[in-house]
Image (cartoon, rainbow, N blue to C red):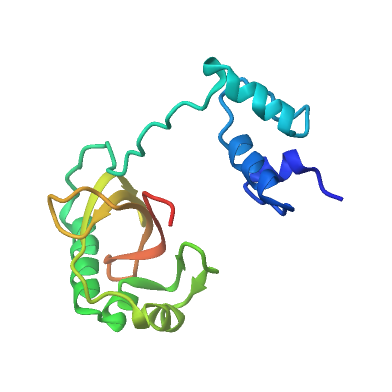
Length: 190
């Protein structure tokens, strides 16, 4: 038998009947300071809670979706990585996208397993892209043959950011910056 309070805190609920479903919804949104760890919810607790306006749930603050950090200018060799990525994405060109990665590059896609190596990355991008994309940096560093770019993305330049990313970079033998790892996720939960 599982602990109902723990299940409710995690948003995983297996209940019987409409009353328990209501208790679950109320329990999940219980006001701060309402002790959800010590007791199992029951009708009496919820009724008591509902009778006291001080204890009623407060509206949640709206989610901020745009990255609040300002853009930073990148040196041309690092900026080229972002611009080439935008072009490859907009064209739906998985070969060009995979070509931006080192041979041992990794894509850490949200909700998926890491994808390693150019051939696997090309297959991974097989059904991606074909839409406009605007990337902007909010931080970066480069020293020797390694570097990184942290940034935000949107559908078009000037639109609110819809997600963020981190790229780790390394130089190839010719001195060209390549992506070693790419990890991104949206600003809102799906």
